Image (cartoon, rainbow, N blue to C red; front, top):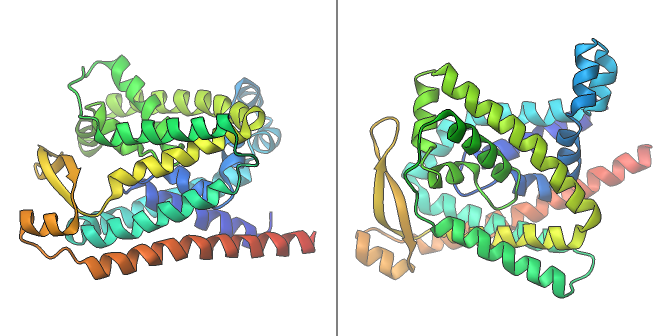
Length: 315
């Protein structure tokens, strides 16, 4: 792998990491539109018993090739860089400029879903039904109310498995899934307190979940490609309910820092938002940023196509 290819993969990982720190936005969406989604799923799937045998027998070079190590390393490095460097910035922007940020991501997701639609080879009854199911599931997730759940080890492990699976699905936020499972504050508190037993159980669940789920997703993409992609597209459109810029907060919760955060919200029109909050709806800024987000995705797609054509010529 040449340096510019490695750098491009790392930048795509950075974009995924940036999306993952935003509640309601999925890194899987970025992976899909940047053209690395299926390779990412296949690479995760390759971390299996054969890979472990190669690792524990110290056949490291074979292990590295088996798991597509260069690809995974570049993407994971980008995700880590983005999460550790942009998490505070995104938190600040969501706190102080929520309408602008949500508008930007609204445009981004609409453009992403339209680009994903191109990958559906044939729209038939099955694909359309799959799309509708995807929209319905994602929409339900965004409006479902969080529940009270146990803090036992098995449920923490199960929460890790479910949340990590959601993170690799376009349009579904793993952080929001944790919130629905009643474990977001618990896990954030464990991270803040450096509670190693809880973090270890959660990570084990996440590892088992993502490796198991990647096998299923890879099989679906290979044998039911159009139906699967149509459902993933549905997830994206359904998630738009979460990123609508103007909301009315009906329930709140205390985060790990003791600050009041919105828990249950309902979408409202800009005029209604101004009447409820006595704040400017920033309609012009919201429309402009929505368009910017929309065009940015197409710019990324064009840039990716140009890079792929250049690589093909070099080969």
